[in-house]
Amino acid sequence: MEGLERWHSQTLDQLLDDGYDISLNSITTEKALEHISKSKRIHTLDDFDQPDINRPGHHEWHAEILELLDRLQSVEDELAEQEKQAKELVQLEATCKQQAEKEELD
Image 1 (tube, rainbow, N blue to C red):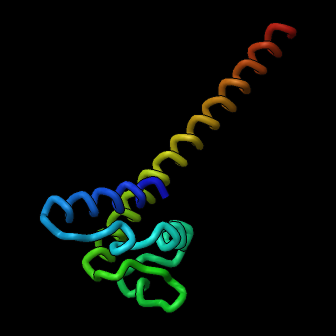
Image 2 (cartoon, rainbow, N blue to C red):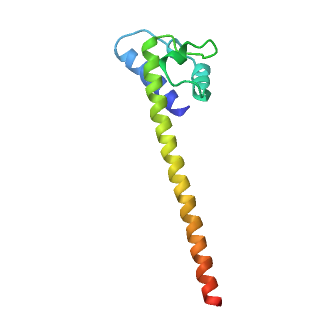
Image 3 (cartoon, rainbow, N blue to C red):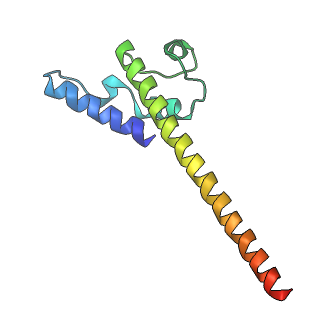
């Protein structure tokens, strides 16, 4: 959600810098961003056309959001993999320690 909120405010800032008179809710609402962040079914631009998806009004923003979701998912996947590897390392260290203690007793 944080990444979508950052995109939301950066998009507004850019539009205001370009001279547009626009509000944050004109781009999309916080509720819509929350819905998008929780949805597991947005993978293509066509997914924004589903009736139960609250979406920003401008089609150009659909592509930006889709790219952002892809980047965020990649980061999330990478963090999950790093966490998995860290757990495996801790488990391996514990196993080695147990084996060393067992060898000392023998």
